[in-house]
Amino acid sequence: MKIDDPSITDSVVKRFLTYTRYWTTSDRHVEATPSTPGQWDFAKALVRELQALGVSDVELTGYCYVIARIPATPGKEACAPVAFMAHLDTADDVSGQDVRASLVEAYNGKRIDLAEGYALDPATDADLAAQEGKALIHTDGRTLLGADDKAGIAEIITAAEYLLAHPEIAHGLVELIFTPDEETGKGLPEFPMSKITATACYTLDGGPAGEVEAECFNACKADVRFTGKAIHLGYARGVMANAALMAAVFASMLPRSESPEATDGYYGYYCPMAIQGTPEKACLECYIRDFDRAGAERRVSALDHFARAVEAQFPGGQVTVSSKPQYYNMKEKIDARPEVMAILKQAVSNLGIQPRLKPIRGGTDGSRLTEMGIPTPNIFTGGRNWHSRLEWVSVPDMATATNVVVELIRLWALPHTSFPSGPS
Image (tube, rainbow, N blue to C red; front, top):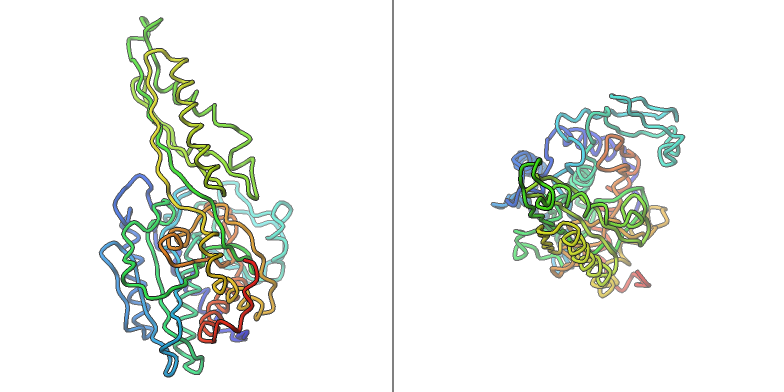
C-alpha cells in the first residue's frame, strides 16, 4: 500500500531538520550509558514529541532508552507485536556540534561547494548524480549531518504520526525504541528486554531506497598496551625500549590489504582507531571486523603474534592485548525466522521497489538485539556518506522509508502464511 500523501514528506523533512540541531555525538571512551549528556536532551525531546502526538505509553529509562507503545486497533489485539528501532547518537569521526543542514528542494545536478574546501561532486558520487531534480539535505561542510541515525528516528516517528491519524489502518501492538550510544559499539548494555513484547524488530539505519540487510560483521574491539623502559635519551643505547615507537611498529604490522579502505563486500579488516603514548607507556585501540566468526577470532589471534614480534624487536618492552566482542553477525538467527525478512521484502515490493539484500559493513543495535533473541534486520533511511562532512540524505528516500514502516505495520497484522518465506 503506497501512501501518496505529501504531508509525509513535509513531516519527515521538518522533523529531521529539527533533530539535526541536537548535539548527540557519543564518546566510545566513556563507559557510562549514555556516554554524553546531549543524548539525554534529545531523548527527552522525543518523549515530549511522542506524547504530543497522542502516544500515551512512553517511557524514558534510567539509561536513556526511549520506549513507546501504540496499542493495537480493535480486533487486532492478538496479532504479533512488531518493533522499530533507531539510535540517538551520532559518530565522533567528525564533529556533530552546531550542525547546519541545508535543504535543496530540487537538486540541479551540479557540484555543491561547502565550507573549508569541501564539495559534493556528482562527478565522483554516482548516487548524488542520480538525485538531479529531487530534494536532498546536506551539511555545510563543517560537521557531519547526522542522518545516521536521525533520519531513521524521523521516519519512525512520522510513520507513527500517520498511523495515529489514520485509525482505518488495522494493526497490532507497535513498539518504538530509540537507543543511545550505538556508534560506540557497546551493544545495548543496559537495554530492558523485559519491557519489550515484540518478537520481531526492524532498525532504520541504512542507505539508499530498496536496500535491506540481514547480515553484518562480527565485531571485536582490542586494546593493545605497550610498556617500555624510559631513560635519558643521551644514555638510551642498549637500555631504552620506547613504548611510543613500539605502538607505531605494531600499527605498521596490521596488513594494509586488510584495512577498511582496501576492502569491500564480504572482506573483513583491522582498523586502528586511536594511538597515543610516551616512551614509557602507550596504547592502541583496534577494531576487528569479519563476517565469519572464525575469521574474527583469527584476526584477534594475529594481534597476539604481532605483539610477540614487537617485544622481540624491543628487549625489555612488554605488549599486552585484551579484546572483547562488540556484536555478532545476525544472519543465522534471522534466517531461523524467515517470515521476518519475507514480510519486509513484501513491504518494500508493495511500494513498487525491488528489495536489494546486501551485507552491512558494520553493525546496528539490531545486531545485538538479534543476539538477545529478537530478529532485527535493517531498513534503508536514504542517508549517504555517513560519518563525514559530505553526508547527505535523499528526501524521496526518507518518505519511502516512512511508507515502508507503515506498510510493515499493516502487513504484520495479516497472517504470516500470506508471505512466501524464501531465502533471506
